Image (cartoon, rainbow, N blue to C red; front, top):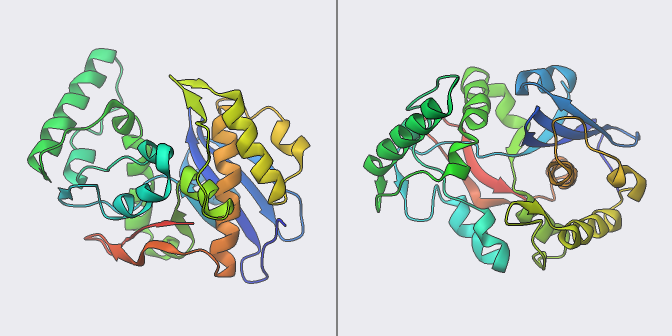
Length: 258
């Protein structure tokens, strides 16, 4: 069932998308809605009381060890063939190596090379930055800046991960099929996840609707799964990996919740 609590009257599951952020959200005793927001601050302004589970790394290491910050190495074994979806996050210095708004593809690649060089210097074993990880650096920084500036937000914004969420919602069994194959949406994998979300209380018509402009269909399903994790967090059912969470140098919790 899709439920929230009196102490946490609103829930939101959030994923990054081309438009900014997609959120599946609901208030107490109301059906879920889906919205897109241009910034995370805009999302917070629109959903001021929500417990939020977001598919984005929260809490950054000063130095990156084998396997990532800690949470990644703990959840990968749960996912079988899906474990490649959990990638290691480089150091804070690498994430902030170049914070420009890139106006050319050449500048974007130059910034990627710089971030990789800094990552190599701040990791053991030395490891650069994948294109996939670099593509979400600006979104990681967006949440990071908010959690540094507003520590009170740390009590209601929690990191999760879609494949870990689907696994936990599926009784500890990872999804059998990938959401994407060679960058294209895999209909069978999407259907597997929709069926699970329906078993967990979603209406099929809600999940079958077109996502907001600037968000992809897999972003929508990921956000829907994140909202269920937000409900688990609000009710005390969710567990962090690691338990208890680590903290980064700013005191921001470092854990994947599901």
